[in-house]
Length: 200
Image 1 (cartoon, rainbow, N blue to C red):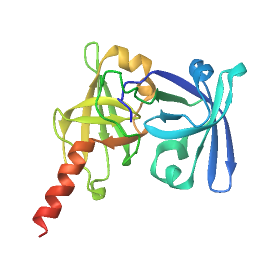
Image 2 (cartoon, rainbow, N blue to C red; image 1 turned 90 degrees about the vertical axis):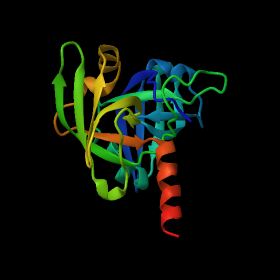
Image 3 (cartoon, one colour; image 1 turned 60 degrees about the vertical axis):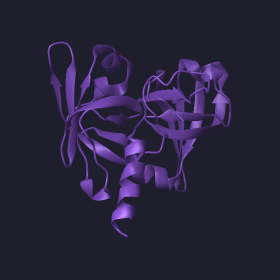
Image 4 (cartoon, rainbow, N blue to C red; image 1 turned 90 degrees about the horizontal axis):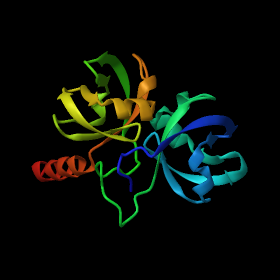
């Protein structure tokens, strides 16, 4: 479980294709504190570390084909800056919202608008997956806990403060950027329960 509060960023330094899998090596200052078998959210994707090179501040994760097809990892390249969050400690504060690290689908950035010291970023997604947003609800974008400003059938926007903009890969977003989306888990369960009830 995660909170959607990005701890730091990493840089992709190696990509190794192995049949349907992709081994991704990331360089980051927190690598010295990471252990093999540890779960870390990478742009909101919960992945397990399979190798750690503490001398060079690097560690490696493996993404299977299912993950590649469902997320933006299929588009990344060497040098890509990735948002990182280690799992929630049970005695810690839940500063964002409950994030599972299970990406529901991707969305595409439609616009980045500077608004007098902050940024309004709008995303479009495929509504055929059955996901939805609500104004003032929570959403995870590349693992970052955000509050929705505008909400439509196939789009939503968020307001981004300068700190979040500079300390996440949001600063690299532009029209056409593909991002990972995890919709609010509580909303998903309510939707499923209502559907089961109404289908009776």
